[in-house]
Amino acid sequence: MFFSKGHKSKKKVASKGVENGQLAACFNKPNCVSSFDKRDEFFISPSEGKTLEKVESVLHDLNFDIVEKKENYIHATETSKIFGFVDDIEILFKEGNLHYRSSSRVGYSDLGANRKRIQKIKNLIEK
Image (tube, rainbow, N blue to C red; front, side, top):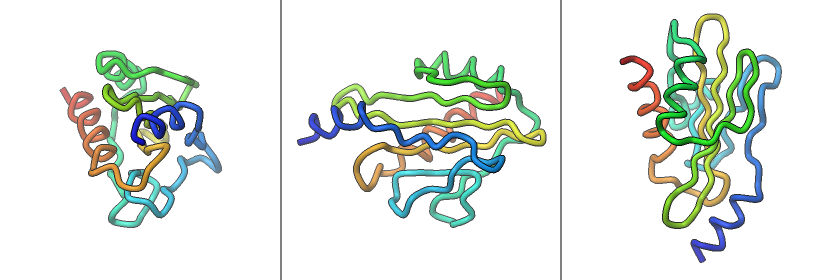
């Protein structure tokens, strides 16, 4: 069952990209965080004064796959080792801040994996 969901997640694309100058809010499932979603359970704070170049370096060091890169936006993916679940990571540089969105493509709960992922990225950017 988990292997089939992992396979399904490889075909599905959950990234919305940038719409109206921001990343998408999360759906109503606890498997996503976004700095543009003001609901407490989904919100994660942006980072001030950091650059996309630093983020790209961190994503590379973490072996994430960069799917799309624009002047102020990066879309990357991370695939879980055991079941092959694909999660989307989006980062937008806007008005001197890095904004984040990380979401699972399939399933309901991620047991906090997306929040931990973004926090890890933020901690590495701060070094």
